[in-house]
Length: 469
Image (cartoon, rainbow, N blue to C red; front, side):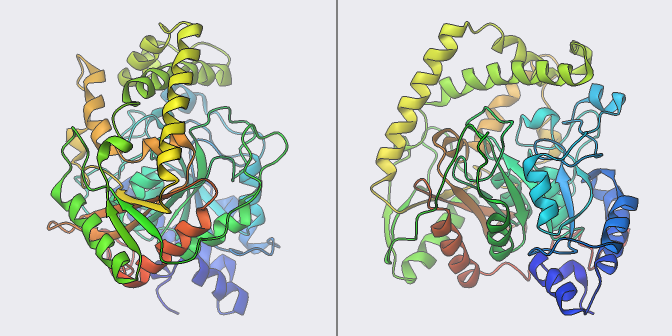
């Protein structure tokens, strides 16, 4: 049998479907890989191996990924009996678990996936690096001195290293796309309301997965999409891709923020490949997308952190203290609590007006191509908040997520694909964004780039097929 760590989720499911392997064999192999690699990477923070083996040995739903091993990020979608700590030390100490499947968690089961455990994330998923104080940092398999980004960094490192072929991710400011970019993976943030999330009242967050191939992402989306009546945001239908050639805007600078040359080179290479396919390319200025909303986005983000701190306390039945919340989040929450309700409403109005202007500008194009992150993977030791002024790290976070957050605000779909590596051999993703409901177009274009600028043969230093601790 081919080394399972080199196969994507679709290929592993095909083995089960054809009788060449059993679900138990896939799960046992994934358990061995996790036990071998996780001491080096710290991507998986809780395991559920016994239940996974029992599920694999029993009848599984007939879905696109029947028998395929899977990991769930420890925030957002969940399944009954699994921990739910959201990166917080107080919930971890209390041993908090989920009592039932969320809607998306149930659909993951229905797709045939077998959950082996939970992946690491920054506390409350609030920043673009995965180094929580409670569980410790996750290390990037391409260079273990560097961050896998965040907040889905545990999932990104687990998939990139071959522990599992597919893992849950969610994205409130780039938290799926940024780990995809820094780990050499595919990460799609869907159109707002396309994937069910009935407990979510934030318009920023969407949930999906990180994968090694575009087809895995497309198959997972097809298996789980579709809102439920209780969803606050609902997208009832997807638009067919417009006919070629596409009008593609290219953003290759960050306005006032300097972008690493490797990230620009990645955009240039992808633009050249798209132009060679016959698409129309037009370089655009950064001020169409970046800058005007940054202040109001920050104000609303801090208010949101304050609410998240309160919500975590509600899960264990008491208010959290400053000693139980990481300094960066505690400082942000304290600032957020200073915002009166009327100012919060006014900030939402300003943010929505900016969002409308971006959507109107984007309507002149089919797709926008940009860097995913403003920098290649950064060293973990560069991303610890200063002890005296933890909020100062925000400038580094803003540099990382400069190109991703705008599409959480507008609700438009965006995908990161790993088409470029820098001179140090670190992955540099490029982002494709489209108009509302054009997720199929992004998947189609990403698939074309996957063929033109293939990445499947590139493996990180820490990969299950070669790594021996």
